[in-house]
Length: 210
Image 1 (spheres, rainbow, N blue to C red):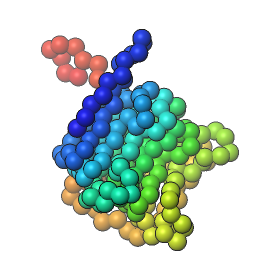
Image 2 (cartoon, rainbow, N blue to C red):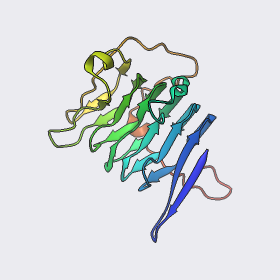
Image 3 (cartoon, helix red, strand yellow):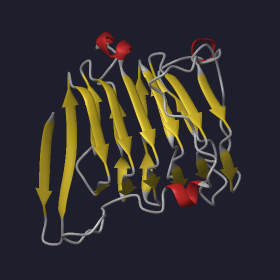
Image 4 (cartoon, one colour):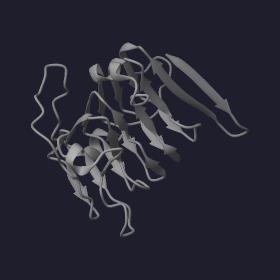
């Protein structure tokens, strides 16, 4: 893992880059206004969970898989759970290459271009999320496929299960079924607004529970 902190006169910004890392848990962080990607998971990293975090005011939020030449990322498994992506996030929530990504019980509020994208045959399972599309007529689609023809990406397994689609949001599904494995999080049926109410930094006082 590599961590970078960027200081300006008003705030400290942290970005996280993972190279060949395993068994990683990122929880209750607030990411915003960083250079390039706020979180990059690459070079064979796997078993990464990103949970209860808040993302805001950023263009290219999260990259899973460095580029098309790194086929070691075929073994990547990443879970996004109970996160909140607020208005001001433009794209890549996440952007996936290869591997398996489970996106479960997250709150997406009015992305700029798209919420979830990918290339190089990623498998994406979206379960119990809330997707609120931007107000304009463009960019209502949650997903974006890149660097492939429809004949190619139609075989990629991208599935939506019990997602809430609001303000005209649509989710284009493709490919075959995705097996449920023991390491996956079981979706919660509690409204997403409640599940993500405490996303971001915890407010704690010494000697008391957070």
